[in-house]
Image (tube, rainbow, N blue to C red):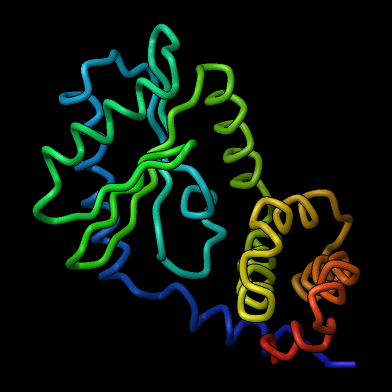
Length: 209
């Protein structure tokens, strides 16, 4: 059994997601996307917010930024995303690659590299997602730190086969009272999934030593 302890976890935590320059770049792009939504797509923006791990302060790296927004009144999702894709190509084609999926428009800036996912939600969906963001933000710091560490170890081992929100829920619902306890609980929570993917729990924990 791989042994993890508080000192080891704190050292790893200090080494991940410490890039201030990258953080500043994402803040700049966040402002740019908010202005773009308000001034270019032709819909009345009711609410806009950062989402995903970045908003919850539980990311271990700055790989992308999720932006969620809703309109007043609600609109047809496909039509809104089609409009965003068209307007984003007009505004950002020289500096970014623009792609559309069924759920979002992805604006991937080239230099510096910064990937933005723009997600349209109904007002009800937005409120639900925003509440989830706030709930994670109210967790004790050691639980937020545990989420970062487990995401890091899981991602290094099995990649995106286990989703970020699943890791968050495992720790939110736990009764753990320490960083080490939370990490151990969450990693072992996924034992069956990890083994099914051909790995062991020790493979995951090795990234936390």
